[in-house]
Amino acid sequence: MTMVYDDLGDEAAEEVPVRKIKFTINGKKKIAEIEPRLLLADLIRRGVGLTGTHRGCDTTNCGACTVLVDGAAIKSCTMLAVQVDGREVTTVEGMATASELHPLQEGFKQEHGLQCGFCTPGMMLAAKALLERNPDPTEDEVRWALSGNLCRCTGYQNIVKSVLWAAEKLRVEG
Ligand code: FES
Ligand code: FES
Image (cartoon, rainbow, N blue to C red):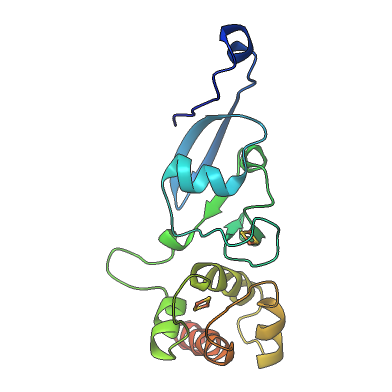
C-alpha cells in the first residue's frame, strides 16, 4: 500500500516509523507497511480500498465502522491497524459469495432493514458475530448485540426483524 506523509524536511521524513504487518481480509492475504498510529478503519478504507466500512463519528459511538477481527465485532475507528497483524478481518464486502447474498443481506432486503444504508454494513457485521455465537437469539438478545450501533433512519424495528429473519434462514439451511 502507498502512504503519503507531511513533508517535514528530508531528515524528519526518514524518521517516520513504519511497521510491516501481514493480515487476511475477506480471505485475501495482504502485507502493509504502515505508521504505527494508523487506525484500522483507514487501513481498510484508504489502504485496501474497501469503502463499505463507514466512518460516522470516529469516537466509538456509532458502530458504522464495525468489522470482524477473528470473528469478533470491533469498531475499526478504535483499533490500531498494527493490531491485526497475523489476524483475519472481515468487512461487508466479504459477506456475499460471487453468486449469493449472505442470509443477513437477504434479511435486510426482505424486511426493509435499511433506508439510507449508512449504518447497514456495521449492523450486519455486529449481527453476524451474534449469530455465530448464538444461532437462535431472542429479540432482546438481538437488540443487545446491536446496542453499540446507531441508526438515524429506521427506528430499529426492521433491523431487528432482518436479523431474526436471517437467523431463521441460517438455522433452516443448517
Ligand atoms: S466511526 Fe467508529 S464507532 Fe463511529
Ligand atoms: S439506515 Fe440510515 S442510518 Fe441506518
